[in-house]
Structure formats: structure tokens, C-alpha cells
Image (cartoon, rainbow over all chains, first blue to last red; front, side, top):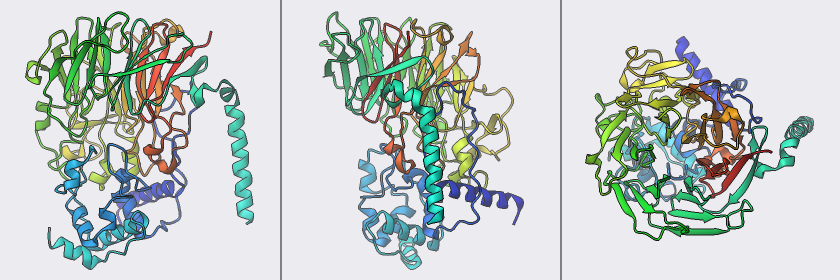
Length: 157
Length: 415
């Protein structure tokens, strides 16, 4: 493991720790106090990332846009929660995520500003973990997605 | 169980401590906002929906742009609360400004104006097109604008892109070089605001390299244009070998610049790195988290504000209500981040940047904060309020608009 990789791994743990503590937002600063331009110090490093792989991979690849609660950001990125894709056919969902949803009718009618990138660079197993996680958490307890489901969807790309 | 009790005691203690700290501010209420010492806030109107920028006429009438259309408001009995509200026109957008006897407003594809007649609150006259026909885009489409004393119209034409990648927001996708988006977007275009029925072709590119200059303002003291610009997103997810989530949450400055004719402010080729304190090449354009562009090619910002705070309005204070230190300084409304996740979101405040002779004369100060409240799940959707627009009333009070619920506050210096 190179030093750079180790640093990245430590940083990932730090951000995981911030996420695990609930990512508390933005407490009001005392009035009139000059804010330094640098951020607050990072929380103490967690001993290990104990999150299940699906949650961890969701946090890395999906959460920055769709947010921790899967609720999206109004006018920017749509919610996963309450959507039809997350609850529907698992292979169709895998195809949608790998192709960035660019060609879906929903995308054309969307009021949201940002496009979803393609996630076909992720391995089948990682996509299966992510999709199983979002179906369980944001899709009303939908069935798990297997790596074979993802592979089958990938063959249609 | 013991751990739980200890945790409860600790959290109770910290809650008491924060209550003690907050007590003098709570006493003044200020609608829950935290203000710089010596100021008070009152609510002048609420419930206007997705509010955006606002403008105030010499008689005190308030005009708000919103996603749902334009709103005119009047405080007839001068008790500090609006008691007449009228929706008018068909312009749904972000900017609204008063120039001479006209109310200028914009949507995503054009700038328009309505005649302001004496005594009228909602304009009865027909809308005129000042310039229309900008391509309809999804990203960064709001055509915010500023007017100088001659009526020159400066329009922000935001770039419909994050960083001009071959494939927008795709991991590892490199930047188009040169970036073709800059031909028609990613800068400020200038028009004659006194003329009607112009098209984008009648304009001239005044400045470039600006991803989305939402906060755009003419400073009458310096006779110059300024902007606080929205910086780029997602350095970590697009280039994970170079940057991590904390880097993405903190390093790409929201840059505050004086905007000069012919100026180039560096998007998409560069960004100003708050950690290194210098401009670096963007990873899409050969950046390695260290490499810098050719010296002197792009100006450093006057102030490098923290990443993703989203500067949505800029105002130079020319009123007389506030103490002398605020005169000619800049207020900036930061709408707050979504793109710091999974790190804690930030922004959601109004800051004051002291200025002297057109340059910062000290560190910026938080002027008004506490808009977002607890913001459950670190999601901006759950922010209580998000400051988005600024205007000064005839008495020198600062008005702040909100995009979550359409609330408007008036902030005045205590007598």
C-alpha cells in the first residue's frame, strides 16, 4: 500500500466518521465573529468502517448528489425515495444506473438541473451492493439485486 | 446503560452551555436569526414560496422575483410589515432590479422590464423585452443581471456544465480543450439596457471563465462590476485518485472578483484551492492537485470564500442606517451547499466583506446566520430557510429574502 493510498484510506475513514455521527449541519456561528476560511477540524478517526458494503459504496458514489436520506436536492437532483426505478425491476434499475438515465423519459421531463453520470465503471458486485442497499432503504424493502442481475443488465448496454 | 446516562448528562450540559451563550440573542428574538451585534431583524412578509432576489423602490415598495412569478408588496401603515401583496406579470426567475422608472426582471431565457408608474404597486403597463432568446438550459440557467448608472446591462450567462468534461459529471472524463461552452456561456454578456427587443447576438462577451456568476453587482463607489462566483463540484467523485470527500467539501473556493472588460476568471481550466491558497489546474485539464496555471493568466480572487457556500446575491452597502464601517462594503448572501455531502453542509448565511478603495480591507464577518436551523439528514431540503437575495430600503435597512418558504426579513441597526 503506497503512502498516497493510505492517506486516501484514512481520509475515507474520516469522512465515514463524519457521516456516521449524523453529519450535523452548520451550527450558527456567534454573531460578528470572523470565520476562518479553513474548515473545522475533522472528527477523530474511527477505528474501522463498520458500515455494510452497500451503505459504504452508496456514500461514496451516490450520496454526494442524492444525499444520505436518498431525498435528493430540490431542483438539482431527484430523490431516490418514492421513485419508480428503485421499486421496479432490478435489471431495469441496474441498466438505468449504468447508463446514467440519460435516455429515460423521466430525464427529459425532469425539473432537475443535473444529469446522472454513468456508473458502468463499477464492478457488478459493487453495483449489486449499492442497488440492494437503495432498494432496501429507499425502495420500501425491495428485493436484493445480485451480481448476476447486474451482469445480465450490462449485456444490454 | 451507564454509558447512556453519561451521554445524557454530557448532552444536557452542552445544551445548557449553548443556551447560556445564546440567551442574550434569544431575548432579542430576531426571528431566530443570529445577527452581528447592534442589529435587529423583523419579518416583513412570509409564505411567498420559492423567493429569489428582491428590489426596493424609493417609496419603500418591495418587489420579489420568485420561481412562481413576480410579487409586489407595500407596507401601507409603516408598521414594518407588508399589508398589501400583489402578484403580477408572467416572469418566473431570479433577478429583479429597479432602474429609473422601470422594473427589470429575468427568467432563464431573457431580461424584461415593466414601467413603474407613480402610485402603482403592481405595474399595469405592458412588459417589454429587453433581451430574449438565450438557449434554454437546465444547469445554471438563471439570468441574473446588474445595471450601471448609464443603463448598461450585464447578464450572467451561466455555464450548463460542471467542468466542461467530454461527459458532464462523469468519473475520469477529461475537459474539452478549448472549452466550447465558453463561446456562448460561462461569463458576463453586456447589452444596452435602455433598448428593447434585443437578442443574445446583440450582446458582447464582457468577461469569461465564470461558471455561474449568480451574485453580480455594480459598485457605484468604484464604478465597477463585481461578482461572487459559484465554483465547481465533485473533484473527489470525478478524480478519486487525486481528491477525497473532505477535499471536495473544502478546497474549491467560491471566488469574489472585480469583473473587468475582457477579464478571464479561470473556469473550467482552473480553480482557486483554499487549502493551498493558490489557483491550480483543474484535474480535467492536467491538474494533479498541485500544478498551477501559467503565472498571471488568471487573477486571484479578492476573497476566497469556502467551497460550495453558493453566493447567490451581492450588495454594496450605500445606505445610511448602518455604522460607518459598513459603508461601501459588500454583503453576500450564501444560499448554502448541497455538494459538501457526505461532509456537513455549510453556508446558509449572510456575510459582510469590509471594502476600501474597491478591495477587501479585512477578513469577512458573519452578519446573519441561523437560517438553516437543524437541517435534518444534512439535506438542504430540510433547511428551515435559505438566504438568497439582498436589497437596501430607503431608510438604509437591509432586506434578506429566503428561497425555502418565501420569507423576507428587514435588518436594521439598533438606535
